Length: 125
Image 1 (cartoon, rainbow, N blue to C red):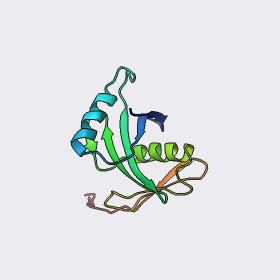
Image 2 (image 1 turned 180 degrees about the horizontal axis):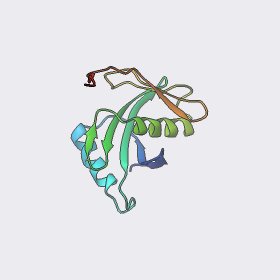
Image 3 (image 1 turned 30 degrees about the vertical axis):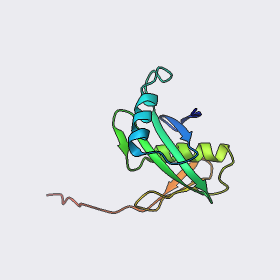
Image 4 (image 1 turned 90 degrees about the vertical axis):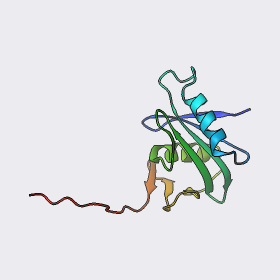
């Protein structure tokens, strides 16, 4: 049985806390089924979180209409909201499966701190 934690952080999300990792194919199938379930008439984004310890966790992001994605800012905020509400974290959250470090924390709202890289600059004529 999966326990769904619906969250709105400007758009709809469902966070599912897993006791252990499942394959990406399994999570994508579950994400697709949950995202388009009749429970969510306008569909929803789905995040699976596991290995939660020391203010870190692993997350699998499934974006509605897209599928698996490497990262989601609003999805990360939704995971933080659920873990904070469940008192499973005690400070900033760091998803540990991302290529770039990200820190999610609460201060008059939920904030995401990470770095930005300029990949292209366009010169105006």
